[in-house]
Length: 359
Image (cartoon, rainbow, N blue to C red; front, side):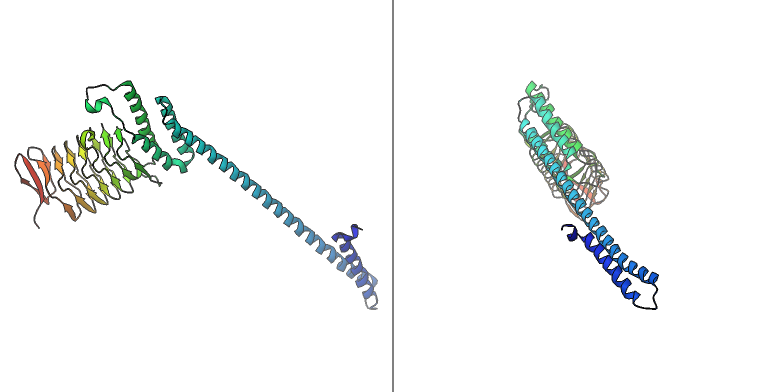
């Protein structure tokens, strides 16, 4: 009984019926020969078989497509599960590394920093988060005996912590893309951080916050490109003022550059740097030499109450229309070089102020 329910049986039955029906009908016509009648009936019956073969082939094709679709969905599900497993492992690695940053042993903290950096390299979507954690570690309070007395040696504990912090700074630099890389540009928040030998030279940085930071020894921003706002507001004030050289040669500030209230204890060099956004050195103090030769300032430049106490070279390559020069002071006994549109006006006690030529 089941055989007669199959499409194949009905196909052969229909083919036989057509063969007999068409052949018999043609045989009733005297003008048609028996061979022609059988041939025509056979063609009619064969057409039914051919249609069945086409239907069967289409059915097999659809079954194969469904099988492939199911296989694809299975692979996608497995890939999704594998990605979830990787994310879970990465989250666990991240949480464990952050936990170890509070360990008492300095070598464990260094290992945790390297684990975070490795996670950022293998999972780029973690990079900004890892940079935030490294910056957060550097924002922790830190004191070294040498900061209050250069002739003093730090305690073993201070030296070990300094090693950990220098490792964190180096890893931050390594995680940042190169200046000419397409990005992304990551942000750094080092507000209030105590930093020594900070070197971001040749790197691409998004926004940079160094408000009230203490920058020790040499700080190097040469060749950097900053795509968002940079704030060094009041960096190095008080006992934590800038110590050593501040190098910023050939850097590019694409947005705001805020140096208001910053104290530069040694040479500050901005040679060939570009300030494309609003720039201010209002209330900044340059205790050492200040070099601005070749600097391009495009938007506005604020030098109100800026104090230059060393050799000063302010021969900008380009100045914006808006320049503020209220009580901008230099020392008369020092070598001071100015743009053609500026001149010195002598004051008391060997000081002079910079003023713009009338007209």
